[in-house]
Length: 173
Image 1 (cartoon, one colour):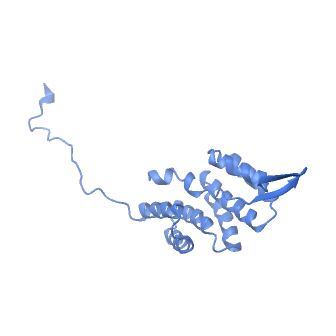
Image 2 (tube, rainbow, N blue to C red):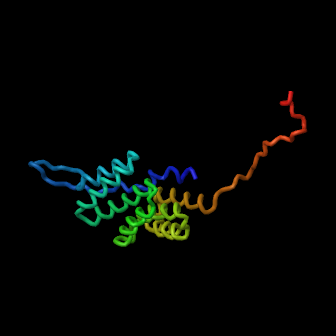
Image 3 (cartoon, rainbow, N blue to C red):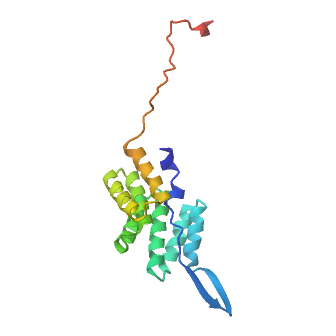
């Protein structure tokens, strides 16, 4: 359960296209969509509401499929942080409909499915994501969350610290 409470670093995309362009005889390197980048920064800082707001703005200004997919994937993650799972699911579905090999969106969607207790769908997304990116630490973390939710580890040793009321209890005075 602790892993499910600390999911924000797992689900965010943080991958945005960068542009190289000339501006006043200078070459400028940086994000091609500053609202998307600002949204990522807010999500990284833990401000999900501001991250979602800025990412929605960036989505409205997106100029490529890569920017759209990044925005939708980050919105999916932002809505997970806000515990608005159905809204997040809509954005993950947008990405996956456009690009079925987008493993980060599959990871985010699996996380939503875990939260909604839709474990078969979570496992299916994890399997596809793991085929696409078998060494992803993110997918491995979500897989562990899935396993914690579906097959929790039971302690092998249980310490019974109850005391027998009549057997040599010196606390009575």
